[in-house]
Image 1 (cartoon, rainbow, N blue to C red):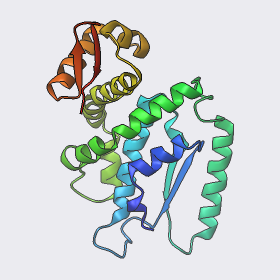
Image 2 (image 1 turned 60 degrees about the vertical axis):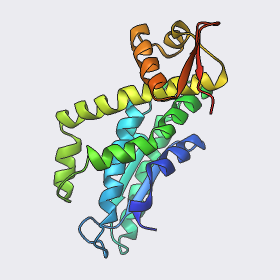
Image 3 (image 1 turned 90 degrees about the vertical axis):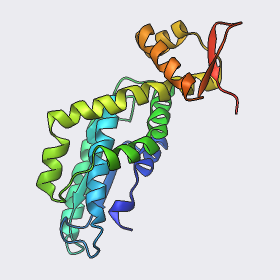
Length: 214
């Protein structure tokens, strides 16, 4: 399978299923047999997934992508051995980062819910105009890209987490603020926006927000 078909959803599903690390192996960059050069899509997904992992409090180094040819079996063995040792040194996913199992599941679920948005953002805001390893490195490791990514991701991640909380029960702005460690004014802003988009509704009887009825 082309490495370009390793979607963000696949990566976060693997972590959600209990994998401590994810290794992606792809063909050498600029040596793709197809005009799509899907391995650059894999490279972009790796950069984005690492940034998302960092945002939810997980070590981005738990994800690694390497590019090699079919004749590089020795390199594959070297890379995977190195990665296995690195992951073993890090320790179990979540636990090593100081998270409970419940918190880990919650944060990964919120990240997975962001995948459709991130696909759209990559096409519209994070698309690299020239396919070269150096260009991708310069773009995704640029402080301006980090600021753009933070701007795109921070609010969406907060809303994703809020909607997950509301699936369990209605909550007040104060409840949500305490559960997620967010500023109450930010929670109110997210709720107003989500209400306008028909995702949540306010129950005046309980002074709580709840998911909008389908």
